[in-house]
Image (cartoon, rainbow, N blue to C red):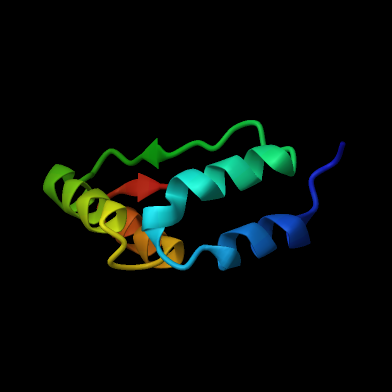
Length: 77
């Protein structure tokens, strides 16, 4: 099975907020994604990523916003 960029994008954009992250990961598994890595930069802000995760889990914003905040906190997705 090969990965299809359109299927991955469809799964990501179907997510209404990051409170649905677990469902997104399940969808990724269905379409063949086997690994999803977060890489942390040398200069990271522990409190900023902690706050972003907390807000994401409560469904305050979507995955794209979470990725932006994670990047600003020093986490490369």
